[in-house]
Amino acid sequence: MKILKFGGSSLADAGRIRAAARVVIRQIDGSPRNGAVVVSAIGGLTDRLFALAAAALDPARRAEAASAVRTVRAEHLRLGEEVADSRHRDALLARLGLLCDELAATVCEGAEAAGARSLRRRSRWCGAVRLAMVMPCCDGFTFGAGSWR
Image (tube, rainbow, N blue to C red; front, side, top):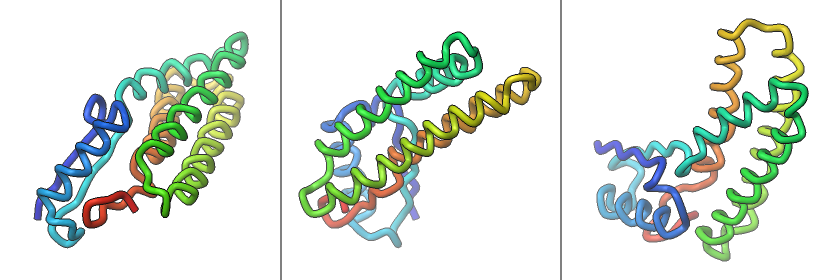
């Protein structure tokens, strides 16, 4: 069994996402039984999520955090539009939208709940925000024989 991991610059744009898909198809021969694929955040997203979380924790910067969530949403929806084939585009975009809604709720709820928490707990919350946003990069993308589905 092969395990392939992609993230960061290898998922920075639609072309690189397609290239990663081709590597998976070539290495796993289109069968999920031949391996597993691990996908982390797209290029530059992890740092932006930590900045977003820091902004959300500062009441004076909450509008900045909300704007950052909207930017992350737009970027993922744009990538979904570019990467998905016409048969699966609507389902993928709906799933990405829901996951971005969850990120927005996590940011709002987490910022409120973290108000008086220790730095250690805030750090854990920042990690939770990152995990919430990694999912749109992989959840809903399944490799098929030569295409996203």
